[in-house]
Length: 272
Image 1 (cartoon, rainbow, N blue to C red):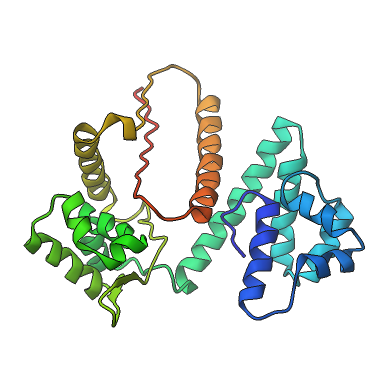
Image 2 (cartoon, rainbow, N blue to C red):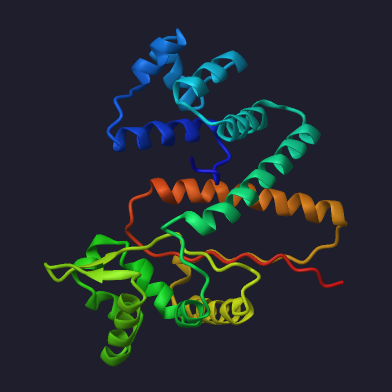
């Protein structure tokens, strides 16, 4: 189950798709029949045009064989989307974040797609922003087939580009296939804030993105900055809203076709 989502509808859709990949015979038609509802109604729910009732969500959780933890989480998402009271919405959101943080701690130890935060890996990968850029470029089919285009876009020398490729292969982040194309082996990397390299990584990423911002076409970029005064409660609310935005952005990116490489930076600073 994807505990990063904030929508029970998207969670249901992902779970069904994942079960299909596992070879389990399941469809929304069969689910609707077992729930004793019309498939058209269930489709409306998934497409954000209707809502499940509490009893319907209970039946759905049983049909999809959710564990107790999974039932609790999807119920939180269901309550979060349905409530119209901002105070209650904030309370539910806090509960959701507790579950998500707990699951992150667990998955960091057992998820094969997440790398161990070993000093060597962090130093090699995170302290060179171009390794991260080239890594993401290889998520695009065009560049998997013609990696030389990456070198041209990033204005890298042949020697420097070879060095980056070799490091990514050594770290088992990418691999070279028999047809000569490169393929990403690992996605969704994230450097924890408690890493000793976090400050250095943040500085190098910011400097690199600043240079790109100053030299690239302004038509392709969006920039915004504001200085304001407020209180601690407002600060917490903005933080929560940003986390909601990040969750929505992750869903959009996951569903999008990989065509270009983008970067988003977010700084929310307190001066005093």
